[in-house]
Length: 234
Image (cartoon, rainbow, N blue to C red; front, top):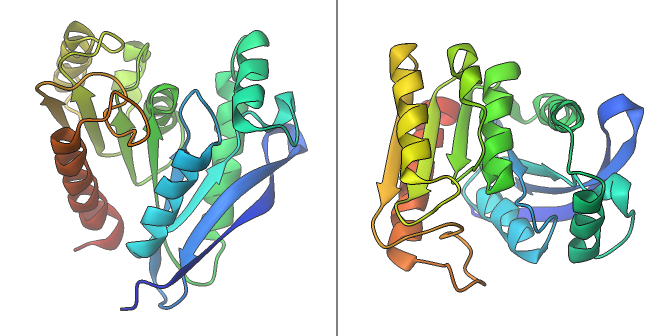
């Protein structure tokens, strides 16, 4: 299959019927396409996050990233919208659920879709991806170093979960990851966690000093293996 794809900014009807912007990438060819909702990190709906969406498009996934900060500063650059969201106290979980649910509905409604939808999130988006996996009907979820996760949700996990963490991170710390591991094990959940040496928070971020090439390379390998198995069935 060709790796040709198209990417563009679109509008979706999010939580409480509010129109928000979203970034959409999908393959130009092929039917029976798997789908992924990308949840951006705390710095927001930025260039690096859009590059991740395009990467999924190249690999054969239809990927949609809702701008969770859109309501706080419509049309503003990502850093200003993120600052406005933080000043407002952050994105409420119910609002995030509504926006992600809308993205899932959009993806599942495409004639090219195979009906399978995963979610992946980074930083605060990792915490939100875990929350989504415990409260909405997604087919697979990836938590990339999501700090402050609500471990009490572990008994409600509805899908396989992949977790990618840095051993030098403090949010989540290794103890935080261990606590989540225990809770998931105690509740018989399907999960696979990887913690990387010499890596801290945001090790996927190629444009930041925290980037760690070895951890990121293996992390992407785990993501493709995981989503291919649960969304493509390969």
